[in-house]
Length: 100
Image (cartoon, rainbow, N blue to C red; front, side, top):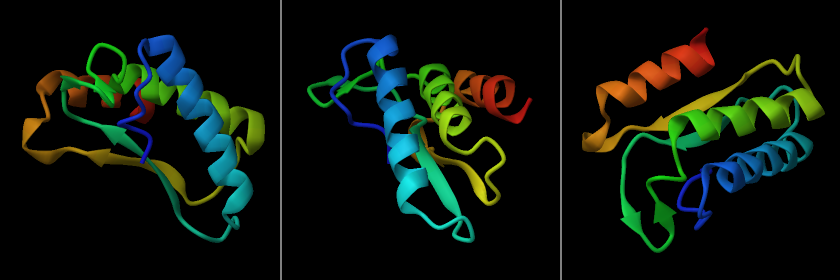
């Protein structure tokens, strides 16, 4: 889970995701499936700033951390906390930034 981070901006949130991805890759054996959780909802409260915790910023950070640590890692992906609040924009950002 790389959301509800209290990061105030997209840049900080992306950096947080990069760091968390690197830590998770170090701690998880290559034969174990590893999914980094992304928020597919918008909320603006302490702990989760919607303007910062975007799908695009999260994926950017995860890709950066993966590239630094283990770019050819098998069994790696993102887990989408979709809930009932996912929007078409969330899915479009996911398809553009991760699936591409």
